[in-house]
Length: 231
Image 1 (cartoon, one colour):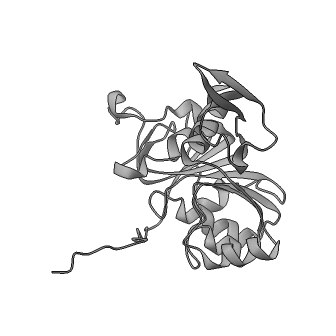
Image 2 (cartoon, one colour):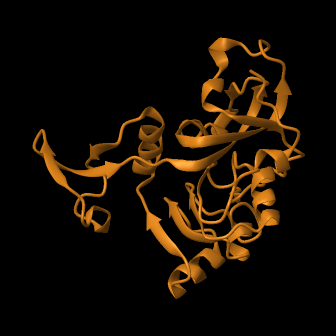
């Protein structure tokens, strides 16, 4: 089944105000840059965005924050975005902070059809407030519910016309589990090849989870934090 769409405009068709959207990536690595830019152009508002982080002020999800298109962020790490901090402290932005492993597992559970699971992460902190607690092997665990989204938008290194995806290096972060958890999954790829060209043993996400795929434009591939050694 050919799942290729012409461009990012066609890929993002149907995204509307108030929807919940998952966006893959870690920091600025493996983020769907083209699709985020298109969401800015669409001007959709009141979005709930599920992403490990919120980009930086002038890149990634920071662009949506600048235009005040996000109502709620469900994230793990948000420390690189001044506008995010301003909106959160002023009460303009609703924020749910989740331990990173729990966020990943909640997305994976959503894609696997598992409604909830128990984890020790967050017990005894604000994360556990209002959540069911059970003891396993003498250790308290809190109940976390799965996450799903109206749209999941991911970025892969290579994909084929049937939607099979390969992620490169550390871009294989939140992208695979989010690709499984969207009602509609959009994949933008650096390289798009005919079906059958990818080695089945190298595929990270099967095309059954992807509804739309397109070849993205050039990627900036920024470095969020550069650390050098000083002699």
